[in-house]
Image (cartoon, one colour):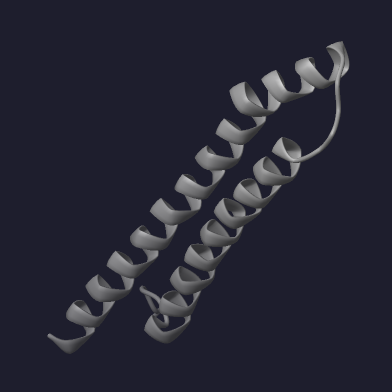
Length: 88
């Protein structure tokens, strides 16, 4: 008979790694935003890049971090469900 389910310990570890990845993306986004703000750069290329960073790139990183956080939460819920099913 095939096993259905997951190794709860591994699933919890996956959830923790997903959350750590989310936090790392948020941290890097913040560091890069600060670096860009403190870079002495003038002209149309600078303006274009800053607008792209603030309007698109930073938002994409935020969405990626949120997706990883949601995946982390789902993995944690699945681990809890597996523990509950296995204990019955």
